[in-house]
Amino acid sequence: MNQFWVFVRKEMWHILRDKQTLFVLLGMPVAQILIFGFALSNEVKNSKIAVLDLSKDQITQQLIERIDASKYFDLEENLTSPKDIERIFKKGKVKLVLVFENNFDKNLQHTHEAIIQLIADGTDPNVGTTLISYASSIINDYQKELFGNQLILYSIKPEVRMIYNEQLKASYNFVPGVMAMVLLLVCALMTSIAIVKEKELGTMEVLLVSPLNPFFVVISKSIPYLIISILNIVSILLLSYYVLKVPIKGNLILLMGVSILFIITSLSFGLFVSSTTRTQTAAMFGTLIGLFMPTLMFSGFMFPIDNMPWPMQLLSNLIPSKWFFIIVKSVMIKGLGILAIWREVLILLGFTVLMLFISIRKFNKRLDIA
Amino acid sequence: MNNEYIIEVDSLTKKFGSFTAVDKISFTVKRGEIFGFLGANGAGKTTAIKMLSGLLQASSGSARVIDFNINKESEKIKANIGYMSQRFSLYDDLTVLENMKFYGGIYGLSNSKIQMKTDEIVKVLHIQDYKDKLVKSLPLGWKQKLAFSISILHEPPLVFLDEPTGGVDPVTRREFWELIVAAAHQGTTLFVTTHYMDEAEYCDTVSIMVDGRIEAMGSPKYLKEQFNSPDIHTLFVSLARQSKRTEI
Image (cartoon, rainbow over all chains, first blue to last red; front, side, top):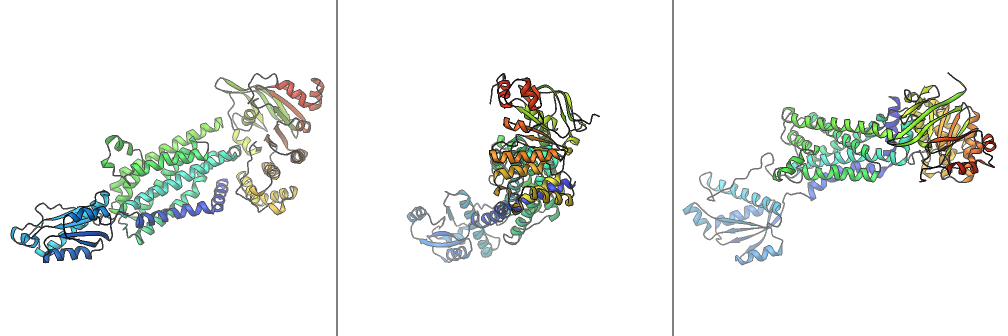
């Protein structure tokens, strides 16, 4: 056991000496959370809009003021004719145009039906949908104030409600996603590189001739990355809670527990990669293409799995990050307990045990032809 | 138990599929001698060393290394031998002292023992000024000597050196062999493979391997007389030419 800690100490020396890599490993989650939180956000703030008010009555004026006053929209221009709509969209600055029909107020009073047209720039469908839903909800609020619940503005009124994420906050989606990505990178990528590096250098041979248990070599390599990963989870959770205001609704201990489980899953994949590759480059490409890309595509973090054709949906079941993503969203955002996620937890456990089993077998076999 | 021999090999064989890398070799190594294990590339030297050091399972045959059977007690063998591979085996990004602490540590040496040994090595190699420097800042010759000193840090009775002087200049090779001879004087048995035939002259016993078999074995003097050869180099070339394996 003492020899084990001698080995862990050596790994610590390696990592602490390489300040640049350490800085990247600890800084990456912070940078990703901040970038996703502020720069790459799907949320729309201060979007420029234009208004074509053919009615110019009291109601339309109030409604326009209300929309302009919200933090989501800024009124850029008052249009005078329908021809202007296309012109202003072509300029590209304005993403949404509101058109009030003639005699808006009068129609509303008499026929109980007035038409407002919301035209969004569909070149970016995500932004377009978000803008429409924000604008609709402001209009709905306004009409409720005006008439109580007696009247409705539209003959068909779509009611959009984003459960668990009423404001469609993107951070609810990407915090779990970033966690999955960072843990995979640190654990799977760094561990597999660290192990393969010893093979490349030729030091692995010397270690195997030493009385050190070969599996100790591998396990002690992953311990420093386990510690770094736990630090990463803590920094991600602190940042998302205090800076991005993402609530942690579920049990914090459960959340940490499942994260540590996922760390071990990632480590076991890292071990698997290192047992099948001989060079650092191969290990890197193996992890990036075999683990990282599928995580981006099939975890549900970037692209909704429900929209994929069924073969892809089947394939996504093989991506451990998908299950971790579900678990974190359930625990962190929905506040669910272990009873709601035991199936996903079992799947992750299964992956881990399988990967460890294969890696140990491969590792022992490799010794024989080393 | 025969105390005269530290290694006794009996019909040791290793097959990879249909290829016989090591073909029923038998030999003995005396305690405290320098044993030169010569052979061309691909003759099976490294495979034989790996079997003797517990890295590889033998296909058939047996061997006793120190007092342990290689087929059953490879863990005990590993704890009692030193090993230096043909590739440089220290960590470049660790300091000289850290490398020594690490290798001493994995052989289970106590801190005070490691301290004592490192002081000794630093003194012998004259590297006082370098002990806290990263290994990568050392000249190659020094690294090689340091790697050897570290491979015998835990004072094993037997050390395997697999082409330890590959890529090293003649002056350093000479210094390196002085270290080897010094270790032999202290009672360590050294099992050395090499390509440099002039190095064979340092050995007490030399064996020449061709195509997985040992074709000649004895003291350098005896071999030269027996094969009527002016030096080991000429003898080696004439034996190696009989090889049917393609050279790498």
